[in-house]
Length: 222
Image (tube, rainbow, N blue to C red; front, side, top):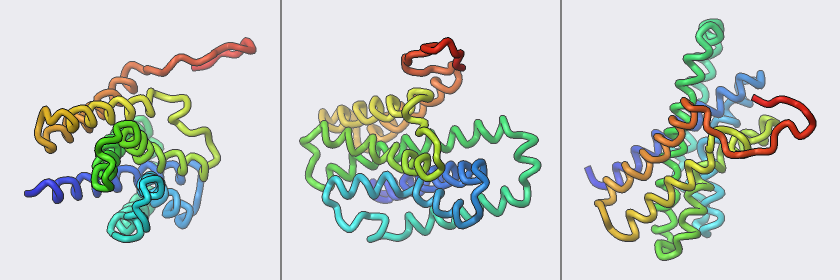
């Protein structure tokens, strides 16, 4: 299996993972099936579209190769239908499902951070570390930001569980490994994506958050 096939597989995995989180948000907001499809698809491909626009990689890959949007659409429909018929069970075991969704969300973030740097390299910007890291993080968090905007809520990257920081650190690690050719690209991919997953999981388990100003008006905050 060559490296292109490996990256295609992990991109599909990330697409599915983010589409699931988009549909779950739509269900929480009581959107109908069309709203769920839109939110799932936007979450899955939105970050990549923003990345490609910045890199001048036009039309964006989501439109040139519709397999990603199609994967997100099919996933969105499947998850919505499953939730429609098993909604009571989901509510009954909400804590378990929340943890599963968090894992999928972390996986999608990890995958798209890596693909963001690879896309920057393909576009001839491998020598621009700042741009590479920026578009990597944008690829990872962009779809989630668009999802939260459409859902009418404050984006998670602004206040919860070092989300964007995990993407930044993972992108820096992956970029460093590639620049100095310390490992093969496959191993560097596993390390870069794995670091994002590990940071996100640790942040969830230990409830890590970046410092913020609390109790400024005497209110308590969790």
